[in-house]
Amino acid sequence: MTKIKIVTDSTACLGAEFLAENDIAISQLAYTFEGETVNEGTPEDWDDFYRRFAASKDFPKTSQALMHGFLHEFEKALTAGYEYVLCMTISSKVSGTYSSALTAAKMVDPERIFVVDSMGGGSSLKMLVEDTVRRIEQGMPIEQVYELALFDASHTKYQFTTATLEYLRRGGRISSAIAMLGGVLKILPLIELIGGAMVVTERIRGGELKVIDRMIAKLPQKVRKIGISHVLAPELAQSVADKLREIYPAVLIDITQMNPVIGCHLGPGALGIAALFE
Image (cartoon, rainbow, N blue to C red; front, side, top):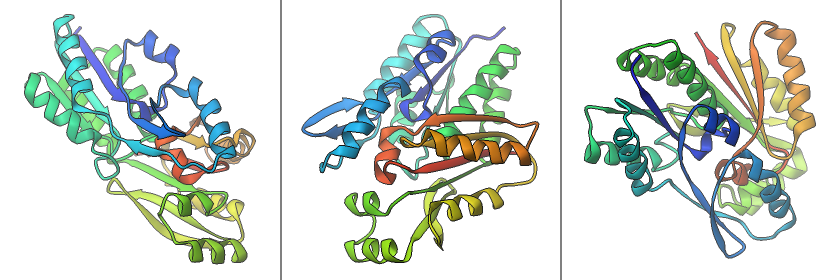
């Protein structure tokens, strides 16, 4: 069987145990918060960050995964005896991480390192990595694994909403006036990843649950896998999972905490739904 090393980035929301079991390398995105710059780490680290974030007036500054991190992981994998490397990253429209990985691959060995722009991140990237692990275990050749990863990346629907407009305001995404008006009228955005870019496709009045109902209604009929992500809202995530299990009883539904680089812009109470479809 061909030895293929998986490299991804920290936005994939993969736990430390899963990473170790499958020998997956992570290149870290980072954030600067309350005067300290740290790597995102893994989901086991994020509850503490979000509790501090929710109680703080400081707003994090985020940064992409750097090229030298990918260089190190690519060289290490090929030196260790892997025949190929398959690297999957957060959307190139959201972060420069994909560009860093692509540049590193060209410098190390472009014939043996395949880089995929997931056009997503978070739950959608997590599902992409998990399916890639399974395909490698089945003994698929690198070309097939790579093509299927590209197919999955183009067949993922990822939607988000927030509990409040406050964190979009703090991050400079909307003005104070719009945040105030939206709060009074209970208008919240439905944000989608379209072609890898985050786009507000609808503004819905009635609060977060109304937006979530609309997100569910917009999911494709033929869904293979669903990932729910949240920021300090496990009960909300579980209730959404229960609704989705009634609609898609045979579909695997995963719940995970949203990574800080994405989650800080949406704030506590935020929720995302990613779906892999046929």
